[in-house]
Image (cartoon, rainbow, N blue to C red; front, top):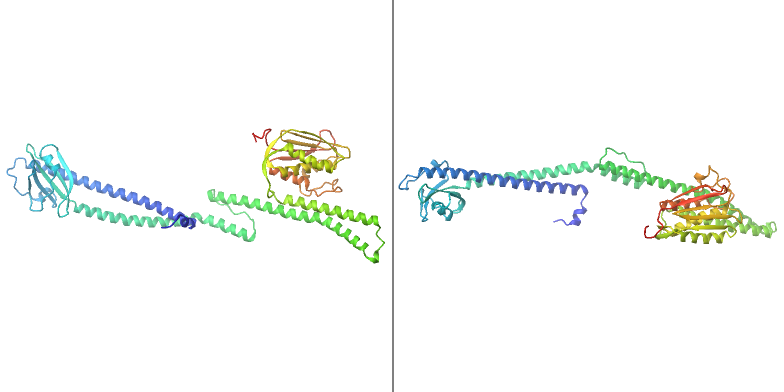
Length: 463
């Protein structure tokens, strides 16, 4: 007997075929049993009606006869296996043949005594022969006529019927198993094609969409699979673009770093000693240090962008006012010459506090970088909307749709330090938290306004 674990190790086609066969087998068994019982009941009812009719005929014919010792031939009763006897209220039985006596009991005596109009039951003789026996009272006499017919012919018919039904039932179950296997094989053919396509994609990384035929569940599964392939293709394209952009962005600082290192190494060469002054050497070392810091920042930004969900990120209930306060603390240390005018109300949401702080810091850093000395950056947080207004030169209208793209730098920004990834990280964090970010002209007419919108609530209990 197979265990549940073994059943689940079967293939889907095998399980479906097995379930189909079991369902058909149960149905055939129920129908066969119902047909067998119905035929048996119908045969018994027909025999009872015939015996009762014959017994009543014998009772009427024997009403005026005396003495009742005449042998009545069985063929006169319409069947060769019908036996007849008379029983009175004193349990005296007179058989009309010389065969073994019938098992006369209380039901027949009650009919003879006039307590019951008739009695019908099945009896078994000492020799093991089964009879269907009917007793009918004689008119105006305390005596009953008893007719009994052997059940052997009926049992043989039922036996043959049972064998035929069993054979046909087994044939039906076998046919159902074959049909179930054929239907399962045909129905699962699209699934096998889908499985083969998935294996082909795993081997070749070919993300070509699969052909979809029909509108059934398999077609819907193929459509969903195609949606997944499209998402994978888009993710792969983004990764390739990121690698290409990163290579392009890293090439310039690496080239500059190599040039500065070559100049420094030449200053140590005795043949060229004295050509590089101490001030020039110190300036080169400062440039090398700055380029290394720029590359470190660029690599960190690339790592942040390369992952959609930071590993080990702690997601919990966050108050944006606290996140903004931490970000302002960091930015004020880096930009001591810029004043920040802050208005912040609490706004609660479920998210990654570190990622949100990184996004806020990037926006504030960007505003501080573009604002002149002694300028004021206005920061306001209300109803889940963070607005940052700087006093810089602003962003050209044609550049605003692109400032949140990776490595995008406007013509004006190319001379400024930075990797061009800060605002791209801001948009990624906003997307991760179902928020939005846009850049627009400041209402004051000077500088740029960056607006971040995040869903949440004003109370931590409602979030």
